[in-house]
Each structure stands twice: as structure tokens, then as C-alpha cells.
Image (tube, rainbow, N blue to C red; front, side, top):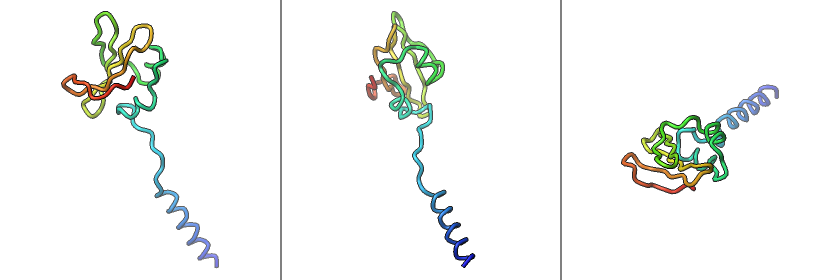
Length: 99
């Protein structure tokens, strides 16, 4: 009986450890930005969530650039608030508008 209970406990532990867990996307992916970027964020909250931008393409307004691991980038147009957020390909062509 004791062996049977141990076998059941082992099987249950194995089943739980192999089950799919909800994964949070990595910070350098578009999925992470889609999940966490909101239009009401200020510069401090942007940098706290995503780190310092990799660059600033702006002239007149800031366009904060975050390079992603797939070679694309997130551009965040910002003055005293977020004006837009865009997912851009490696040729600076628009893939999608996030905000």
C-alpha cells in the first residue's frame, strides 16, 4: 500500500511539473510591450518598465527606440505624454501601431 501511495504521489508531482505554465514574454519582445505599454505612461514609468531606450530618433519630439531581439524595434513618440507607439521592422517600415 505504501508503494502504491508513493507511486501516485510521484506521478502527480511529475504531472504538475510537466504541465504548461503561463509564461510572461521576455522584455525585448513586441508581446512584452503590447502587454505593458499604456498611453498614460510618463517617461519615468516607461524607463522603469522597459529600461533606458536604445536611442532617440526625434527632432522636435522624442522618438524613443527600443530594439527587440527579433531585429525589429518599438518607437515611442513622446513629448510630455505618449503620442504614439509603433512596431517597426529593420528597414524602419511600420509593422503595427500599438498606441
